[in-house]
Amino acid sequence: MKVPMVDMLAGYPPIKDEIEAAVKNVFDKAHFILGEDVTKFEKDFAAHNGAKYAIGVANGTDALRMAYIASGIKAGDEVITSPFTFIATSETISQIGAVPVFADIDPVNYTLDPKSVEKKITRKTKAIVPVHLYGMPADMDAIMAIAKKHNLIVIEDTAQAFTGKYKVNGGDWKYLGNIGTCGTFSFFPAKNLGAFGDGGAITTNDEKVYETLKQLRNHGSKVRYHHEMEGYNSRLDTVQAAVLGVRLKHVEKWTEMRNAVAAKYAEQLREVCTVPVVPANCRHSFNYYTIRFDSKAKRDNAQKHLTEVGIANQIYYPIALHLQEAYAHLGGKRGDLPNCDKVMDTVFSLPMYPELTDEQIKAVTDAVKASLK
Ligand SMILES: *Cc1c(COP(=O)(O)O)cnc(C)c1O
Image 1 (cartoon, protein in one colour):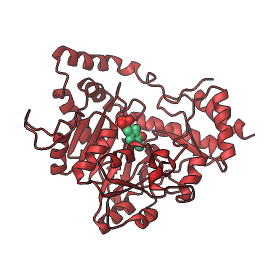
Image 2 (cartoon, protein in one colour):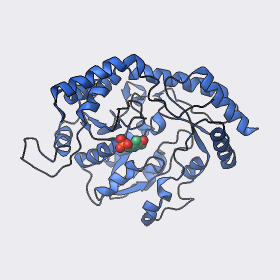
Image 3 (cartoon, rainbow, N blue to C red):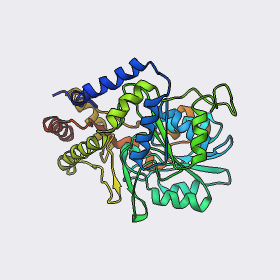
Image 4 (cartoon, rainbow, N blue to C red):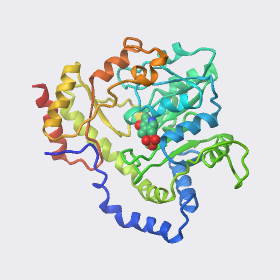
């Protein structure tokens, strides 16, 4: 049985009419840049997250870039982040003249290890960027405590974790992205809230940061042709905002469905490999479902076998950032971040989307088990 990694159309029929009406409405009004649909989506998205402000931008990469600038990260600053993420997290640090510093990850949840973060702090450190990888919340209590102690900015890369939640200091549940100064989101089609193209957003509770972000995404201007600073052309596309407005209403249900798929995977696989364990203070959004084997040979064999039988699979990420050619100048090598080295050699991501059927799940778990025989 063929199983794709994601199936963008599986959840489409029930909302097709609503989406087509929303898109047609944008065409009829011919208001294609910002406008009502973007403003409404920003309000709804902020409300969903319990954030004061949300700002729609062109993609999740620009969301990071502008969140870094608006929150006060400058050229020469050091920014501590995870080596086990997509390069968007770190390339945007370098591109504003700051320096990415990679700390090690936790061997169980694969997000930033707070103890390693603390060891990387220098006089130049300005910010910490935790990544809620695969939809699993980073250890935010410990990260926020370190940030407070050393007076550091925290930007949450929430590209894979919209609808994920964290129980802050054992108290209130907060949506991810709403704990640090800014949360950054991607609406790339395969993310939890996918657009029909590119899109992104930033949330914040800081009015000054919000005002700066609004300028940054629109050439540094609040009033047309008045530029208090230089900025970017990075607005959330109006057609995408209309699509996202419809999909937003369904996303919580989709996350419940993803969690149900994850539970079924875990039931079948926990005997044969390491499955994600969600701590009691976390809600996982399962953008990806990632298992881990006790050797690289087993992982590579699983990859070969699943591919042969038509089951899509992926390694997020086969080469950690500190070992990428793009960061050779930082001098990273194997052994510097031992947890990360071990994890990248043994993780393996399975198909994950809300509508996966029991038959598909069985085909996937049977194939994983067969690869181990
Ligand atoms: C997808 C992703 C991004 C970038 O988002 P785009 O919308 O593709 O620019 C950033 N960080 C992480 C962790 C991601 O998974």
